[in-house]
Image 1 (cartoon, rainbow, N blue to C red):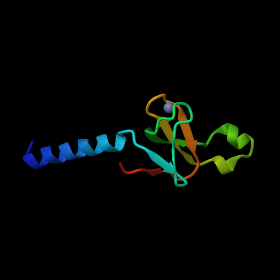
Image 2: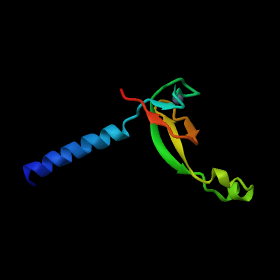
Image 3: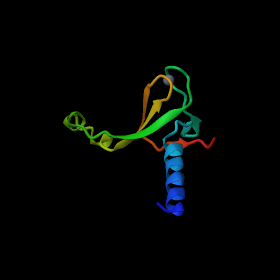
Amino acid sequence: MGNSAKRFLKLFYKNVKEIRAPAPYEVNNLRVICVHCRHDRFDHGFAQLNTALLSFFNLDFANRSANILTCDRCGYVHWFNKDIRKVKM
Ligand SMILES: [Zn+2]
């Protein structure tokens, strides 16, 4: 493997690590604090709200992807149906 390829991989892994690292987030200009343990670092993920149950109850407005913040300390899962913003550290 050439030197430039090695450098690229190193940079790539560093970026992946930073993207995946737990971080503080804001929703509606408010810092997100874990409702269970008051921690402020979260893992960000997405979830489809598209379930048969929601459709059954005619709640199709909820049939879109939601932001999920999982508390880095206690694992409590917070759901947001709005845009969330990562806070720069
Ligand atoms: Zn927590």
